[in-house]
Amino acid sequence: MNATAKYAKNVWDGLKSSLVGMQITGKYLLQKPITVQYPLERLPIPNRYRGIHYLEQEKCINCLACARACPIDCIEMDAVRHGKELEWVSFTLDYQKCMFCELCVYPCPKDCIHMGTEFAFVSYDRSEFKHDLLSFKGMAREAKIRMLEAEEKKKRKEAAKAAGQEVADEPESDADAEAES
Amino acid sequence: MLAVTETPLAAPAPVGDGNLVLDLLTGLRPESVPLWAVMATSALIAVGLAVALISLIAMFSTWMERKVAGHIQCRYGPMHVGWHGWLQPIADGVKLLLKEDIIPKGADKVLFVLSPAIVLASLLGAMAALALSPNFFFADIDLGVFFILAMTSTTTIGVVMAGWASNSKWSLYGSMREAAQVIAYEVPLGISLMVPLIVAGTFNLREASAAQGGWYGMHWFVFQNPFMLPAFLLFFTAVLAETKRAPFDLPESESELVSGFLTEYSGIRWSFFFMEEYAAMFLYSAVGAFFFFGGFESPFTWAVAQMAPHTIDLGETIGTLKLLGEGSLLHNLVAVATIVVKAFAGVFLMMWVRWSLPRIRIDQVMTLGYKYLTPLSMVCVLGAALFELAWIRFFGGAS
Image 1: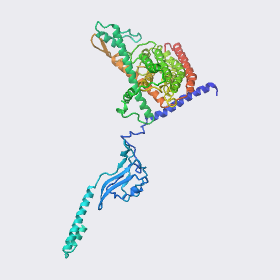
Image 2 (image 1 turned 135 degrees about the vertical axis):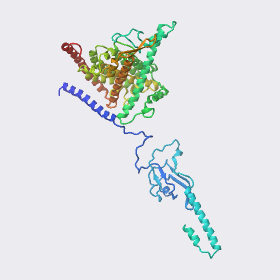
Image 3 (image 1 turned 90 degrees about the horizontal axis):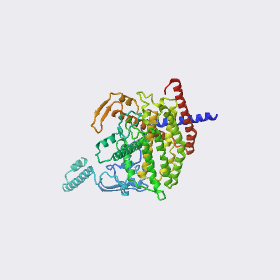
Image 4 (image 1 turned 30 degrees about the horizontal axis):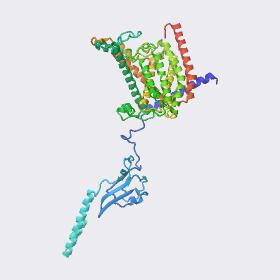
């Protein structure tokens, strides 16, 4: 190739490659952006994503299986037992320690602790990373009613027992019927 | 400066005659105020308008740059400050004003402070020659393009001074590269602009624009000579280098030289350099529009110029004001809109190039400038001149 042809080829190549490059970026310019406006809209997160935990508190029986399963002991829970019902004091998870391994989820007998899809968890203070998973403290309304009913039943039973001891000849059909109901 | 003249375009208006601001001030002036004070005030108003124009252009261009960059990379760009982030430049401006103004310890204080002023002032000077419409302009200079080229070349002195005064190796490398490449691109820039000048036969922006009238745009210089399109490509490439835009942004190559000659600058001084860059982009795009793509002339401008003239009387101090027809208020407004749209189309093209092509090496800039742009632009000038001569010889009259 002689010098003139090479020169012309260089000019042509430079022009052509510039135009090809601009054609590609021009195509992208007309495309819809693939990013999303994050705080306003979010990309869908897979169901099996391991984010911040959530607890189905009504199901939980305070068995400590999750706390024992935790390899770094970041789960702490405390509840007072009233017969079959629980009065919740605390159920905390320390996200300074938690490594989102999901080992706490599998041993749960009631299947009540889950890993959620929420991942944005920031704070200005370290203490705020100790996260309370309880949706309410104390006892649930239904649990309280159930407890009161159980106590009443117990009292009635005891009263019936006492009456039965006093009136020995009366059959225990009354108490049986009540126990069934 | 905002002169609404009734004189024909060929003859420049005498000082004060037909100058709207000056006439208004002269009419309102009490006997005790001397004429030179009125003229100085009118000049100050013109300078204020020019500064406001540069700031507005820089504001809109920064927003546009970020949006174009974002969309080329499939992002949105700024979205939160105002509708689609259109108030972002104001937020940025407030931030830049409030930033600490740092002058490095070993810097040459005088030169360090002076260089952004030189850069911006030379561009302001160049802006003075820019006509915004047939009757709205700051200064009607017969050698308009020549003046613009001369004034914008002066910014190089500011850049070299900034690099030297910063007392930083990165800054000095940046200004050395600027000094090296300025010779490579200034020559083809001037020579490639000779081609439309041969066709136009004038250096004056308004006259060049007036020569391209007509409703269909075929009178634009770019269609009048086969050497016009290559000349425009050469001009555009040289302008990219002149305005320090990618792929020729070697003075400020942020991936190698931190920020080149801008490394040590912060706050408002830094923003002066950027205002200069964006205003220079606008200015050169406008020059390109004037000498290749019809200037003020578009089908809309032509249509307004064809309307029947209509004037209203505004009292003795101002005189009559033309509303419709050629040289009227509406004609001027449409002309301003046309030139601004054309100039921003050029600015958009520069942004597109910037976000498409990689920065080239300094030796490649030299090769491009000396071995390709300069000889090719000379060939274009020769070809255009011969074509014009041949046209006159065989068909009579200019093409």
